[in-house]
Every structure is written in C-alpha cells, then in structure tokens.
Image 1 (cartoon, rainbow, N blue to C red):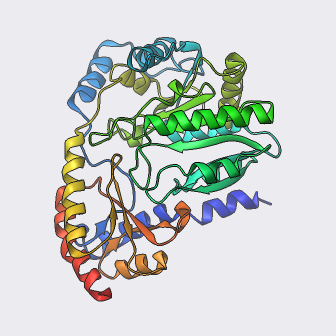
Image 2 (cartoon, rainbow, N blue to C red):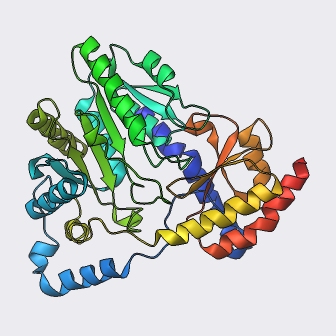
Image 3 (spheres, one colour):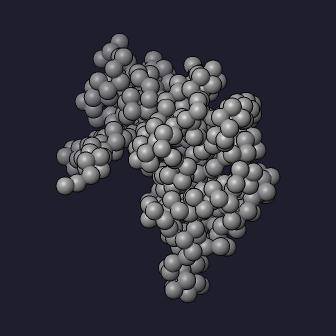
Amino acid sequence: MFNQTMQHLGEERSVIRELFEYGNQRKQQIGADNVFDFSIGNPSVPTPDFVQAEIKRLVDTMPPEVLHGYTSAAGAPEVRRAVSDYIQSTFGVPMSANHVYMTCGAAASLTITISALCEEGDEFIVIAPFFPEYRVFVEGAGGTLIVVPSDAHFHLDFEALKAAIGKHTKAVILNSPNNPTGAVLTAEELKQLGALLDQKSLEKGEPIFLIADEPYRELTYGAEVPCPMNFYHETIVCYSFSKSLSLAGERIGYIALSPFCCRADDLFAAVAGAGRKLGYVCAPALFQRVCAASLGKVSDVEEYRKNRDLLYEALTSYGYECVPPEGAFYLFVKALEEDAVAFSERAKKHELLLVPSDSFGVKGYVRISYCVSRSVIERSLPAFLALYREYR
C-alpha cells in the first residue's frame, strides 16, 4: 500500500535525530538544565546583527509581492549573479551565474546533485567517517554507496581511494571541514586527489565528479580551506548558509558547478531537472536575498573556538582520547569501550547525549556537537569525569 523504503525511513530516524528527540523528552521530564545534549549540529551562536539588519531592510523596502513571491526556479537572477561574483572574486574561479542553483540548504543541494548525476549502476564514494545521510541521499537516487576508510589522522588514504575507484564510480563526495572529525583537507591533498581523479576518469572514458559538501567552510580555527574547483575541473560545490550564518532553520544554500566541468550547461540542465523532479525549486525568496548580501560573512567563530578549547582540554585532562578539530564544531572522541553504541547508552545514565560513530562508517568513537551554550559544556564536565571514572 505504501512505499516500504519510505515508510522505513520515516519510522527509523537517524541516530542523531533519535538522540535529539530523546533529549527533548528528557528535558521535559527532568528539566533542560539537567540534560547535556550534544547530539545535533544546531548552531548556538546568534545570527549576526548584519543578517538581522538586512532582513529588516528588505522587509521595510521591498514590495511584498517581490519579497515573498516566487523567484525563478533556479533562484533570483541577481542572487545567482552575486554568488558567482563572490566565488570568482574570492577563489579566482571564472564562475557564471548560469551555473549557480539556489537550494533549500545543504541536504537539497546534495540530493539534487546526486539525482542529477546518478544513472543505473552508479557508485558514489564517501570517506569514512562521513555524514550518515549521504547513504540515504545516494541510495534514494538509485546509486550505491562505497565507503572508503580515511588514514589514521582522518585525512585521505590515497591507496584505499585508488583501489575503490572503478568503472562504476560516478562521484566522490568530500566534506571539509569534516563532520564529525573537524579535519580540513589541505591544498596538497586536493592536488593529489585531482590528479588521481583525472587519471581514473581517463581510464573510465568519462568524467568522475567531485561533490564538495561545504556547510562548514568558514568555521575554522586557523586552517585554510582550499577551493576544490581550483584543483579539479569536474567539481560541484554544495553549500549551505545554515552553519556560517546560524540560519539552520531557514534552509538556504546553493549548488555551484565549476565552469570547467565537461558539458557544464548540460550538467546544469540536469541539476535543474533534478530540482524540478524533487520539488526543490524556488528556494525561499527572502533568504536568497539576505544571503546574497551576506556572502563572505560569518557568525562569531571565536565562540566555537572557546567551546572547543574548553571541552577538548577538559576531556583530555580526564584521560579521554580526542581528535583535535581544525574546523566545524564537533569533537570526535574515542569511546571507552569497543562498542560505541554501548558507550553512548551508558553515557545516557549521566544525561550525556553523545552520537556513536557506527553510522558515520567507523567504530569506537562518539561525536560531540559543541555548538551549544558555554554553560551546557561547563555543567556537563562533572558528568564526563564520572563517566570516565566508571571505566577507569
């Protein structure tokens, strides 16, 4: 009677969302101050004042029928042009507005892009650990997800990647800064990756695409985030303003095709067609314009740095093993037993909500989202210490 795959996805939420909902229930039962919810990447830093001011300016000055009406399916022309101009001036890529598609956030960008590319038998490579919804997006488009391990420092393992790329590979999905590790890929890594993909594309006889998932691009702590378009022609950038401007609930982002992509105009037509099929046309008109005026700006990253340092220094002083994050707002922590799910369940007894790493494609870790208020971290530290002492 129903599509069984869709029913299953609706009944069984992601591990992250399950923990988030569990946390909401616990907060109602015992009070929000007694629950330490590190489950979801919901920005805690306030939306910047310049964003609020731009919203007010647009509401006060723009005719309602324009402000709240439909834009073109791919986005308002002036917004697409602003995005392409920003990419060109910032990264030196000769972008065209005709290759920018405005979307309802990163999830829409990814699902549109994957659907635009995917043909029968196609494989999409992800690097573990990876955002779990990649599997839903790829399999939902009819593709096969191929998981390739990272190296010991959670950067690219080129031998493993080289072995995984084959005649059915359609694209490699990269996420830098990475969720959940905070790792940032270097220019040298991207250069080496571009050379590998060029070689493998030549062997295959058609392009292998690079999908760069970049919702955390601006959230770094001194690390440079190179633009993948400068290292590989067949690059598609999927961007979101959710994290950089603390606009997660507004669902706004874009897809940008490298101007060097093979048959870029045809590829953009496929992107537009996928957006049409999925119903992702005409992204929110008000926030298209808000974000066009906010390109290159970012929320107060220093607040995330303070949270990172406080949590990292406290946990490592207790004895936890943590991956030092170069970007994003997650701390990847070695579980105190082999079974990360069991460790996460035990943490719940201390009202600590930590996401086990199994669904990220690796075992033995938990992800802590430190994009929470400072007080949550400060109040959680005795619970982390008590949990550690239980094991040690």
